[in-house]
Image 1 (tube, rainbow, N blue to C red):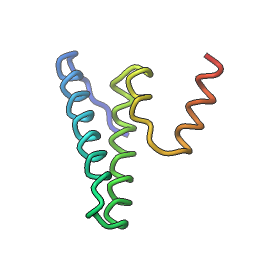
Image 2: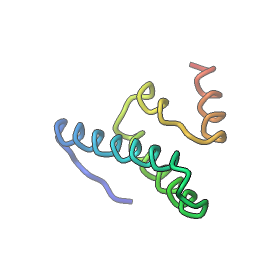
Image 3: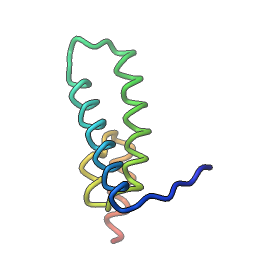
Image 4: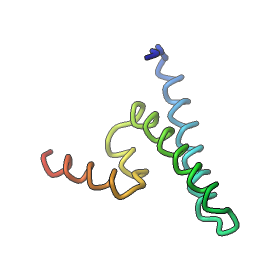
Length: 82
């Protein structure tokens, strides 16, 4: 496991970069010209970036980017206990 210490400005920049990358992947996933195997790799990359994004943002922010059904069910379960 690796650790990082960031200033608040660096943390905000990291959040911005991750968010932009996720939005770009979502845009590419909606492109019908991209083949299934490529989309699968993009989905895997999206999940990795999303997991990083969760570490930098409050719950309300990252919930907007939850993608798969399994993640949605997991987080719905947690939200019902809040």
